[in-house]
Length: 413
Image (tube, rainbow, N blue to C red):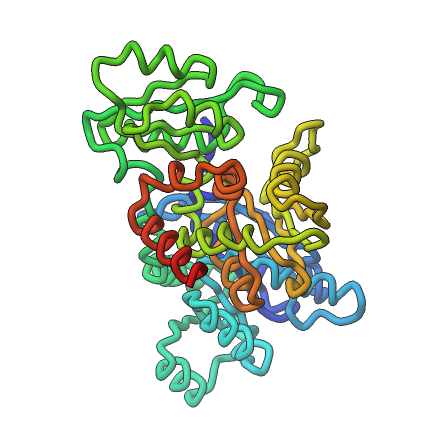
């Protein structure tokens, strides 16, 4: 049986100083020797991930990190990777050893709070020392849940599980929909799935599978076709579908073959809405108007893969952007969790649908772009805008359309 993808899991980050017992805590929570445990400080170098089921929440992903007080050049790199984990953390567990609570722990709690991430303070090795009363009063005043554990003996683990369940964000419990609010029960969605060199052999990609599953859960129907079969498939129906969803690369043909009175969008735009803020992506699409020759554009890919000849992020989107601008652009690309610390030199960030990520990491990147004053757009929305079918692709989303027309009026004025 396939395990739940990471994007479905509540991401729980374990943070603390070296040798605070984070790895022991993870092993106790999962009842497995997931992380190496040693008396030597700094044993955990890179983040260690462990998926498991935490009922009644469901699938979660624990992430054990290197000590935030690590030293030296290698230590700086470990701390950087630890901070990357913050970008995708839904619940943060700050682990202190034997009641020790100082600058490192306080800064980590403040960082979690500033990002809107629920924080839990865990005083591990409680058999060696306990937190003083004034500290407990401070945590209570700040409404930060706290508890004591002895991870090596399994003490306090049940209480930690209960604290994690209580801290799970509402947006994780009630995940934003992909398509269920657009296709009512008893209605049909036609899904256009190109089978090309980028299509994985023998299976559909995750956005397509998730969309089909959500339609089934909502008692709606789905029809799956390739782009060259769409026109004939629609002609065979005795009533129009509620929605046509396409791979963004087939936008032009699907737009031409779909009747004007049938709403159409792409998988990428559906996931832009579920994973991020559609209105901010609309702002990013309009920023394409202001691009000029020589500007810098960052292509951000969530998945690590070997680009092929006509790769969507490395080849097609840069080509469509350059054609729209009418000049050359400096295109840079990042993969996975890598993302530039300094975004100020970019005029636009174009992000993939992030179907393999949790919503927290996408929203974190969008916040960083807003703080840097750099517009960010999504693959599907960028493609639709440069091909001149943005209105058509955005039509299923009235709020985003309103934002789009308001911003266009402001640009004209």
